Image (cartoon, rainbow, N blue to C red; front, top):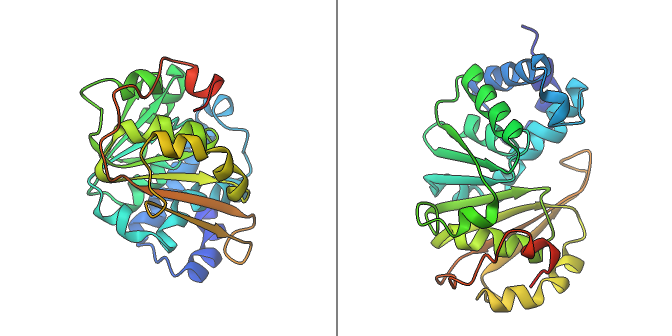
Length: 244
């Protein structure tokens, strides 16, 4: 099998000083091949060119390891909310075979696709669940049980706070993959930050420009310091329709 996917990633991995093992490189190429061969893939992603898959799905998913390796490395249980086609879930599972990953999505088709990709790629550390995020956050099986909760291209920060913090354990981390307009989103989330008990020293922001990626990317990480009120998350639909 030609290593066409990781060939596109290599120049950026060198800049980022993110060395991958031959086994990891093989897994990324196998994942890309499996995705494109699956008849459901067009319904979970609009990216079909191997170079774009390599950079916009694979590389983008592991980019935070450049600057926040500790919160990712220390986590044992990782939750990907709104996993969609399996990003950042599947690439992170390749990078950390010793961690347990759960991908959650409200679309049955998405979780079935992700489960199939994990199985075909040999990722035994991945499981999936079909659920609304709001329902998951009130489920005792999941509430405040995860060391790291990640979201990629899911919603605005004001909504993500209500989604992720009820699922993040105290002293765990929530991490958001965002666009470059973090300052604007942060202002809009001021009330949610206050209501959910996030202090001004509890979060960090980063923006990476095109030196490392062929597009700009912003990130927010929250270190959860206190338990989340049982009022949150509210009923299904409210965090999006009426953000805090």
